[in-house]
Length: 160
Ligand code: COA
Image 1 (cartoon, rainbow, N blue to C red):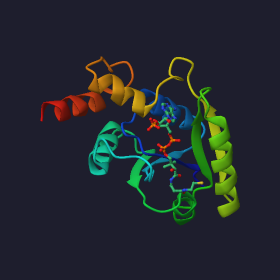
Image 2: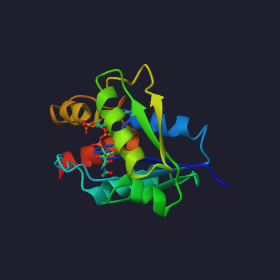
Image 3: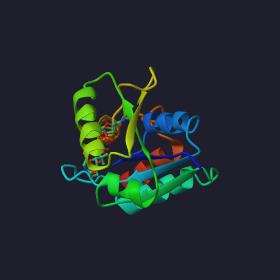
Image 4: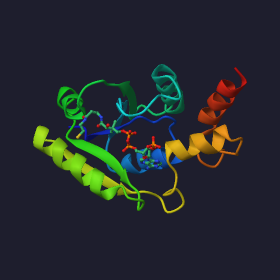
């Protein structure tokens, strides 16, 4: 049976920090489902359909990576797709308490699903999607922080 994992987030935009987590999770799991979920408190910068297209394009050469969107609870997505692991990246910048809470709540809601944490890469720990957006909207160079395809999309958005 394939070992599947769910990696969810708003990915607005998807960064090299996220990519690092996906690549490392692929060394342990057979399939990763990247799910663009909804964070009610966040106003979208890139449309969700655009984020989905970008991720589909980014991983089109790797059949182990599936890209999807979901509006409900993560644990329900996991149940529907027979996924037993939720992958999360853990940065040393205050993630722990919230992640602990979410992992505990998700386990309560679906005891068959465990959360697996990856310590973020030491070169990427300070990245967040908001910071990338901030640097970008102020004219800074984000090429180190996001995949090329994401940078190109952001530049396109700036020009339109
Ligand atoms: N590298 C770079 N940045 C990272 C990162 C990494 N490895 N890991 C996290 N981040 C950043 C993200 O870019 C994001 O930045 P931002 O706040 O500036 O946008 C921030 O850290 C928070 O990321 P994350 O914790 O993944 O939050 P999110 O808002 O992207 O996603 C969901 C949160 C979607 C996972 C959560 O709201 C959810 O599970 N929703 C579904 C509904 C549900 O099941 N709710 C019950 C939960 S118990």
